[in-house]
Image (tube, rainbow, N blue to C red):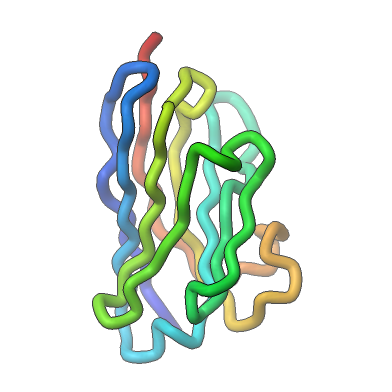
Length: 124
């Protein structure tokens, strides 16, 4: 089992950058594939990005591709989401999630472990 804690969310202006972190407990972090998801106000939670246990394979939602970068430091048990060129539509609560396999990384229902979320607000 793994416990996840996100941090780094705050209010930023359009066009700015922000990096979110997700700290994981335990000594087996590298065995988990990780994902970032977000829930905009009044909307359902949606997939943002995912990375394999090694970090060598990454996937992105079309809406963030080219602006966001997912990475991980397995020595520090930490997952990151670097967000550039932020837009008001990126406003959401951002969650990290963990799973053992990497079969369908965009399917949030297959992630058994979730953090509590961190709020990102992008002002226009």
